[in-house]
Image (tube, rainbow, N blue to C red; front, side, top):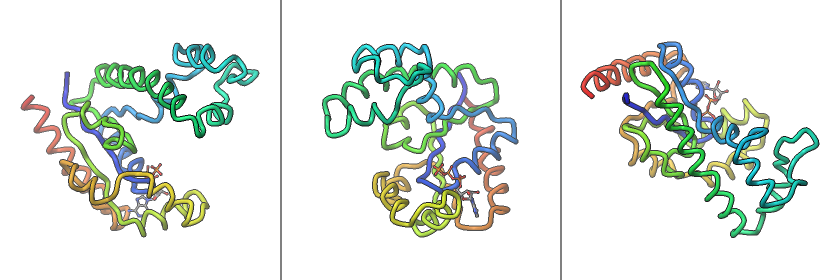
Length: 200
Ligand code: ATP
């Protein structure tokens, strides 16, 4: 199996922007958020178990998961949240590893906003943080999502701190500069990852 790089960064840091450049360079990506949705898709084992546990009215009329209802069920019920995490986390992990194993590029990337928070850094060989200041996170997210600075701040506060992530990451991309400055930084990392993947 080849080298896997875990790509992370807080809300609005530029993960997707960076991931798109890696993809242009021919690197295959697995997105933890997408996998987390796939494992509760229509007809999935995860969704079947959820419907058995919470009752069939956890499903919408089109058999998809009613996320609002699920939130109600687990809101202020830590034991139900724990049950859900115990069900889904192993399924998500297995599926991510399977998808990473099926990639064919010289190395591959797992993109995960909560890489460190969810211990997914243990599944990868190397971690890459897209770093920006909380102020820039608020600015860029506000422009993108038309949300208030307070709403963005709540999410920032729920994620690991900038300092914590900086201390854990093997590699860091500084994304305070212009968008055009990003590409060269990504290409430099790409060349380094190619070298590393040749040595494994
Ligand atoms: P989230 O976790 O919230 O989905 P993300 O980390 O994937 O965010 P992006 O969506 O890539 O972040 O970037 C956030 C916003 O900032 C986007 O609108 C993106 O186009 C913009 N952006 C990214 N990098 C820069 C930059 N260097 N200069 C200006 N804007 C940028």
